Image (cartoon, rainbow, N blue to C red; front, side, top):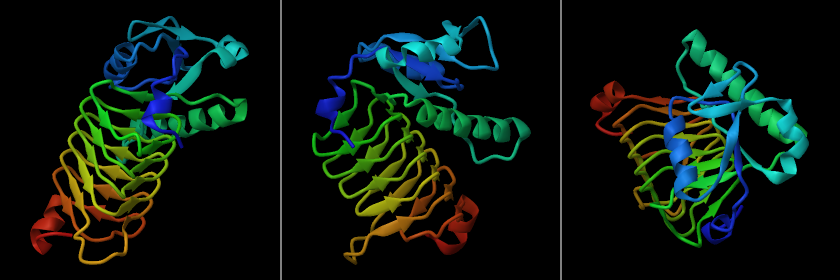
Length: 230
């Protein structure tokens, strides 16, 4: 885990592993942070993608010169294309570990991040997001634009925090969780015990969560309207 001060020293060019619909945002984050982009490694394509060259296995012969970022995302949907992309992301993360590739941490320069926050590798923090002191963002996490992550929050490996989501208080988010657009997770502060959002939890857009959720839980607007708040 590293601080933003360490991450700002990163200047190695970036190779993307796979791609996604948000590629132009990811590329712009690199360019804004003065990180060169070499291209995209994706065995399913050739030629050019998103204005970048599609690279072959030869790029791994020079892996010590670059950092790598798994751009293929994942989604909780069950459409066959979604399932295929989810599997592809897992395969690309495994490839990083097998080949000993160094994961890039991509932070847009418009973000406000405390030097006391800690971030792992293969992490992206989107434009205009804020992460305060004491927060921990683990490996393979994708935090989209305009998010707020406060002190005491831990976001577990390979979780996704979507656009304008807020997580505040002593909240521990598990691995492979999906936090929807404009959703809010708030620790009520009535207890010193951390609030936990379990592994593989799905929180739908615009839902407010104020209590712990177990592994594999789904929090939806419909359920929230019945119980007022989770």
